[in-house]
Image (tube, rainbow, N blue to C red; front, side, top):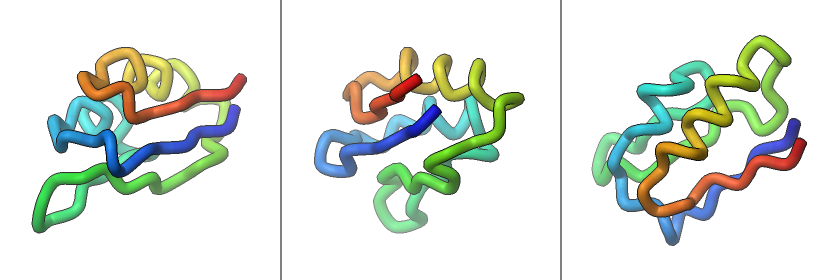
Length: 64
């Protein structure tokens, strides 16, 4: 799995951090997504898929 984020689309809702806190974080000043791990371990795949599905701005792209 490979993950990419479009910070220009991100609205800072934080749903990704709630779903996959080991993979995503947010900037302190504006809440924009920070990708912590672009190639997460297999045990994080379900959480990453949930994060991408929950993102209201569709800022997370997941390649299987």
